[in-house]
Image 1 (cartoon, rainbow, N blue to C red):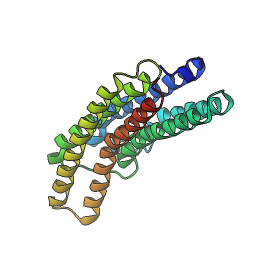
Image 2 (cartoon, one colour):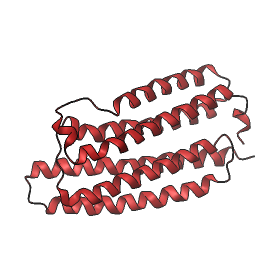
Image 3 (tube, rainbow, N blue to C red):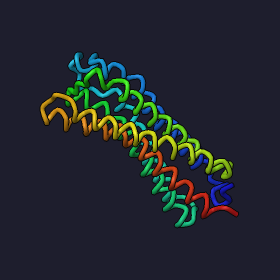
Length: 214
């Protein structure tokens, strides 16, 4: 248990709601992705990003948590740790929005031969983020299972890395203009970022748990 945070019920509730909103942005990305991949989204010629409303709501919630942290009674080190953590978590909905922007704004087209690997990379990244979210939730309740979830995040991130490398090689083997290859490379890197971010956040959670074990 986090003894320093035990009385901070409002903060705990805010963090839980914030994390749920972050995961909602990823769920929206997952729902939208098939239409992005088959070209339906781009064909609509609509620059609106369906992930944006979730990312924007998460931003508002993050700012509310920051205000609560600065006005609360946490020790300075605990406050700094949490501020760094929510700042890291904030990168995830930003990445989700950025992934859809490749289709909404850049009108990205992906060769059908790459679809399976692209879908697999996204799903592995989403799995890593889901396991990461459990480590954050456990901070307020039970530190012991954090290591187990962290190991799962590490495994999934390694799988993401392997798929990303394979995809990048395949991109540069395609008979495309260099500009198209570079656009695809950047897109693949954006997908891979989800696994990297999940691992980074989980590492932070593990360190916070170690520092606050009784």
